[in-house]
Amino acid sequence: MEILPRLGVNIDHVATLRNARGENYPSPLRAAKDCEKFGADGITAHLREDRRHIIDQDIFDLKSALNVPLNFEMAATDEMVEIACDVMPNACCIVPEKREEVTTEGGIDVIKNSKRLGKYIHTLKDKGIRTSLFIDPSEKQIKEAKLINADIVEIHSGEYCRKLNYNKNTHEELSLITNASQFADQNNLEVHSGHGITFDSIVELSRIKEIKEFNIGHFIISESVYKGLENVIRHFKELIRQNRA
Ligand code: PXP
Image 1 (cartoon, protein in one colour):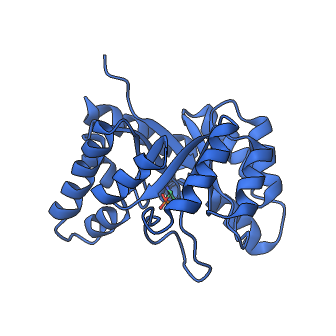
Image 2: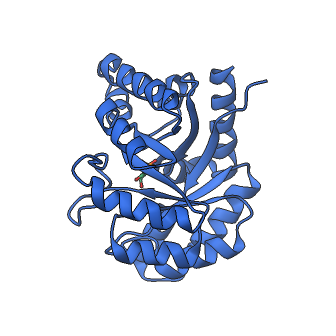
Image 3: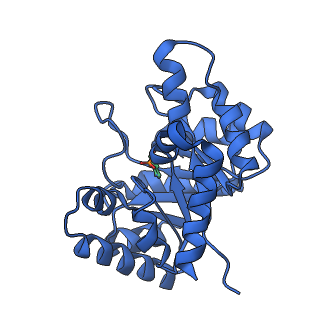
């Protein structure tokens, strides 16, 4: 029987809500523990350089309290690699980061940043932390990720998901993700995908059998306002199961 893709829940936006009022609630840790209880296979959090949502203490609290794997999203900087080596998450996903962006806008350019990324991957792997690179669906980027020894590539699904949301033609974006996932898998890279995924976009993405993990945040927290975390997580897991089958 095929193993189903894992659902990683990104809890950054629980922290966004907390920070909007400068209070100590809602707690990202409480939300993460609930996600775990409701079937999340992992928890993802992005410590941004400007600390706009998750802060350092959140990451340490998550690591010590969670039973499921913690995926630490971070920019490619010395500071973040140092924090990762202290926290010791199960995996680090390296993402590009611009202060002025609302969210991670594109994948990291592995070719342009090859030397620096290679050095960070080496440091993290030495510590036993799996490393993932968040990339656009491009064979060139995948080849370079393999060359510098990444364990995982997380394929950016944002373009596909946004077009689907606005009822535009998604044929090209879906083919790019499908082809990139197959190419990465053939190159022995574990394939993840994330960004902008909703109940609608998970349907076709779940059918790409090379994808082993989805990381989903904004929609889960948003939809939970209406339906609660438990219903939303269970529904995502059910959609993944039905469509992978
Ligand atoms: N994967 C990566 C690498 C990301 O940077 C993000 C956004 O932080 C996500 C997944 C989750 O995206 P969303 O919040 O749109 O579901």
